[in-house]
Length: 416
Ligand SMILES: [Zn+2]
Image: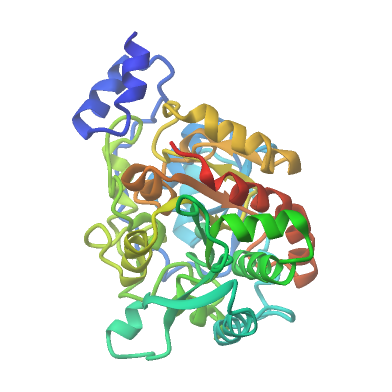
């Protein structure tokens, strides 16, 4: 009974959640942190990347996160994670008794975009062309400004959303709306390309592929390939490691959403938020929930459309996430999410679960926001095996990911 009750109230209130944790039998053991390091390491980090072998996966990831490491590329099978480290952080790794090897990040020495990738400006033109050539099924909208544009700089930096649906085909009830997001983190190059390929495929195969025709007739599909436009342009200019937006030292947009922002409790210790409250950290969450215009743009879109499913695509690590990021206690609808996973990305050997169950806790994320605030299917992904795969690899990834993405669109009519 106790457990059942805790499931129902999981997302209904902070005080209740805190109370739940004391009853939970499978609670994560959190290592004691005596000296929480306030990190401003990004400025001192060079190009040195290490692959860390995790011993106690959960505890080690927690400890590394609390210390503010820039972590990426978790390999759930090999139990390794990568980090870009400063000299001090390398010393810190040794003090944590973790073994690691230096392993340069793929294609990081080639500055800017590699052959095959489109720039932000090219992407905007290509989305516009899709809409112009197919006005009956596609339309392009500017859904908001970036940080730089709100500051009177970079007047062209808008966030674009392509909506794909057969406008003439009416249905008895409103068509289920889904939202696909890429480019939240600027240095992750594959997701915007995959998002564009999804858009291009839906539009170009309409009337040719019966399954796609059915989706475009009966679903309202919204695709935002690049959210973090300011950060993206930094990458295009050769700042390959840029992850956050460009507000101050940068805000991690995927920690800035108005859903359990900077939350502590349950399985998230108070020391956890150290890295999120430190402006130099790669997971800095900003000064307030939805303080960033890019986040406001996405949140506002829920006022434009009743979004029933959201999928936020990141890189890298081959994982599929469902709510809630800060807990590994199943939400009441866990069976629905598990079913979605088993029929989509499990088929290409992606790991599936909540962020905490697979990796580490996340709060203030896009996918949780959709689930917690709008009862949408809140989904997240880490795709691929590097930040900067060759374009040929992106093509292969698209072939692998396409069936799962189309399946999510098909299932975007699920009501939670
Ligand atoms: Zn990311």
